[in-house]
Image (cartoon, rainbow, N blue to C red; front, side, top):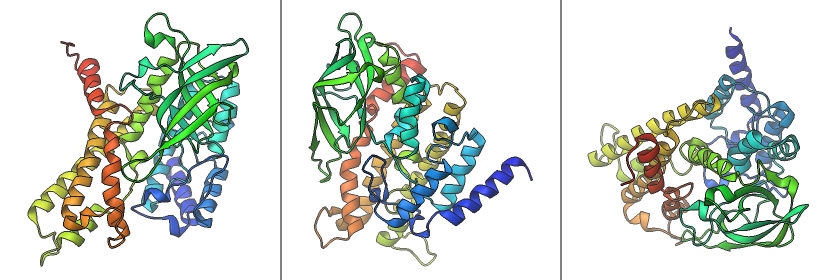
Amino acid sequence: MSDLEAFQLEVRQWLDANCPASLRKKNRSPKDTHYGGRNKVFRSTDAQLWFERVRDKRWIKPEWPSEYGGADFSRDQLKILNKEMSRLHCPPAIFDLGQTLFGPVILEFGNEEQKREHLTAITNGDARWCQGYSEPGAGSDLASLKTKADDMGDHFLVNGSKIWTTNADLADWIFCLVRTRTDGPKQQGISVLLIDMTSTGISTKPIKLISGDSEFCETFFDNVRVPKANLLGELNNGWTIAKRVLQHERAMMSGGEFFGEMGPDIVTLCREYAGTDEQGRISDPIIRDELARHLMHTQADSLSGLRLFMMGKAGIDDGGLAATLKYSSTGEIQRKNEFMLSVMGNQGLSWQDPTFGEDERALAQAWASEKAYTIAGGTSEVQLNILAKRVLGLPDK
């Protein structure tokens, strides 16, 4: 038995013994997700037990160095762990943007003090992060941000606002783009500050969405003092870091780490609402054809997402694959929702009416809220522009 085979057996046995059966679901609801933070709350004792076991195993971010709470996993070991967790339908022990977006960037650009403070808090589940990028009036032109950080000697004084800040009202820290210089090209006057959300002068206002949720917020900064030690990377060089975060975000949104196995199983739903024939096949050939198309598309995106992940771990330029996958997968999740609602017929017209089933109401609300997927992390139009200019080398005009 090779070392990797022995490792896989060890991982399989540990997961079999330690992941509670109640959490092993092929298709999970977003309500099953647990988030980190100073005031984290678990929806069940099994969820808390699973988190504590994974945390103590150092498997929250096992590929990170052990000095920052990881387990020093190689790419092959991480691939095996992900495969075995998928086999058992084990959920992530806890989810946070610090794990997927900001931690990797702090690991790359941060100093030793920042790494030890923030990465360890992420791997312990003690910090919940939000992203301070979008601003009112800026649209897709992220570099036109106006939130300003004035140099006050021993600290920065931050004033301005952000919008569409996911879970800002629940977050402990914000990864914030600020303007630190107004002369010269706008991209060269941006810096990144790591800001404690308990700082005096920060306030948030939830934005109610069509789905009924309020996960997005407006975030306001009114003379917020931020220590100089919270500057990530070099002053006025934040645009490089911001683009790296977006690469991680697009990669996350392109694969299962973001969407997971959320919502009802599409095959089961088609069988339930469309019926089956004597051979046990879904009765309607048009529905069968569309279902097959979706499953093939999803499998292709999944395999490409794995390739993108492995390229990132190896430090290989993705050559536009992240933009391609972000465009492909977010569009497909919307087509899937449209298809599922059409299969459900009148039952797909549910919203909050209690006469409809809970899953029916949830799917209709997901259809509305997941329209945002082709906007978040860079619109589909932006992804096409990236591919046209940077991959295909097409002229601007």
